[in-house]
Image (tube, rainbow over all chains, first blue to last red; front, top):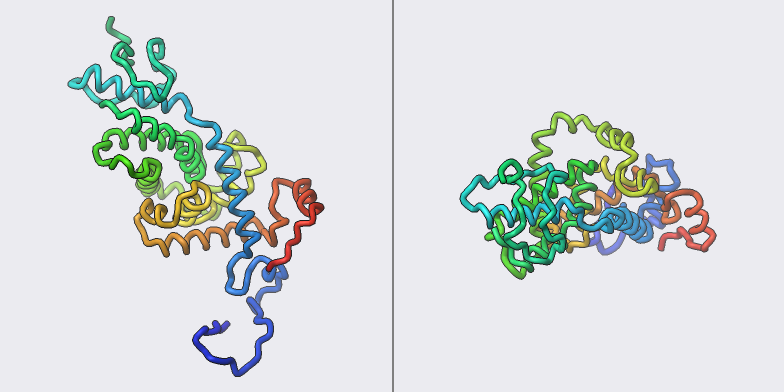
Length: 122
Length: 187
């Protein structure tokens, strides 16, 4: 399978329709591929649309509480107890104490938010 | 650690697409959500490195992508046997994200080489430019372009897409598309 060089001034042999792949018996090849082995624009566009639709299915779920709370918790932890251990409870979203927390992700957390680490103490 | 409200807002604003990226990349919701969480933690811990005014989303994507890759290296033995074995495992999780109609597409996506999948998701789904994608993946723009092209070609092979009419969740949609007179002729 020779590639036609664009630099050549003229071709000695006329090649009206260069076969894409001699070994390919799939007639679909000619439909999917444009001459240089690229996908046709239609297929590219539809691939993109499907990919975006799939992606959007997840995007439209928005921000799970878990992450909004995580940010609150981290900020709160650092503010209220900067000198203490800085590791944050990661996976126990269900254990988060949300009684005093603000759920508005844009709101600044205030100091009265309780820390999750305080469960044992008063 | 007190985040600037604008930084905090930008971070949370990026979460939905970051999460979609993580889910599409890893093929597993729990793992993806852990990745997003770890990404946010790292971002906050390194927030001093973030330059205000630059793209928060791209920064978070970079962190997540690097985390995913390092985690992938650790798990390589598990995953590397792929001849679709990993992708097959996804099929057994019908509670997986999104509607069933994307199942086939998702499985095909999971069969792509990691570099290609990553590039396609960043450019084709998340809407970053080639330049931004190159920065996120720490490679040349041309490399991204080539990965995206190869990803598309491979996807169309895996999905046996002959022409644009082959798309669609099921035959009904295909029929509608066809009835709508959408020609498959290449131009």
